[in-house]
Image (cartoon, rainbow, N blue to C red; front, side, top):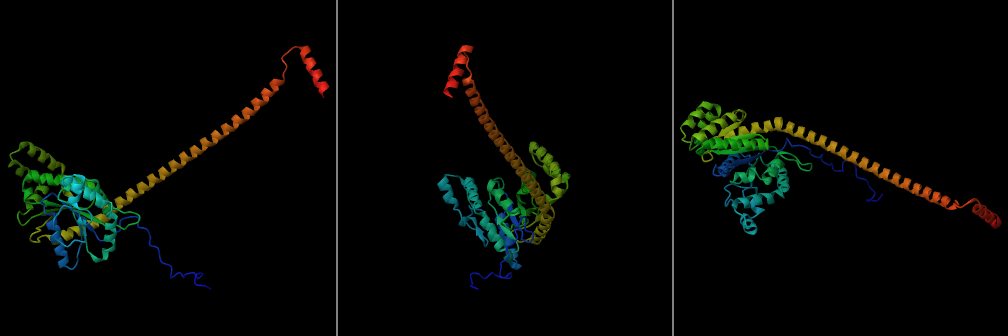
Length: 364
């Protein structure tokens, strides 16, 4: 038997991996670092990267800030290698914020490749860290930010994706002002309900101001009310007081960590919070994802049946038109036959009819 006709044995046939249809729970978690400008996001990522490297559990680091001039930590994927921030400003005539959003939009068109790299290197890192732009609104409220967040948190039929935890960095020194504290909490609340993912609030710069005051404000409304009384703006006091009552339920299930990116204080607690959030992802997010997926399948099935019914109705109308066309043809034939018969009817008197009959007999 020739080599061309030989059939491969079962052991030689490569196995085709099953398609992943949901979040890959075996994948390492990805941590999305968000925060107001100047809150210390990049310094936090730098310290956390050094912390993990010191424990021989290096992270996979992705920089999504196209406007940063220097990244102070070893980065695996850098948006600046894909798009040039200043060139985008010149080419499209944009300002800083518009250029950042455009860079993120351009990055999103190839973000599937980033996810493939994350999956490919999954065995080599303990956690994936994503540093975001200082202009938080450019990431949290743009389409590109949503695409990146959803891509990491959910799944695509051809890609195994990873768990995700959102970290919101708060500048403890600025948050000593109750109004600024309330603004940060509102932003954190909006991001939590927008992403619907495990959420950790990190009070940074604990070496400057101990953020214990913030934890007390979150647990005790009266302490926050006392701090408001020291403020001179009565309108803002009333608004912040009302918002604090509204956010009381939000505070209850919120994970908080106090750290200093300058000294390295509190990063053991950060890793503990990440581990707890991963478990929350598995127990809360995955069932929600499966529920949404089941609802989507049900809607797709209904839509398919609806299209089939519409197609059957269209076919029935087509058959009816054909039948009507056939009836019209039959009616036309009957009408022509009737006209032919009518042509033979003589409308004259009896004598004329007798003469015609005589002529027909002579012709035969």
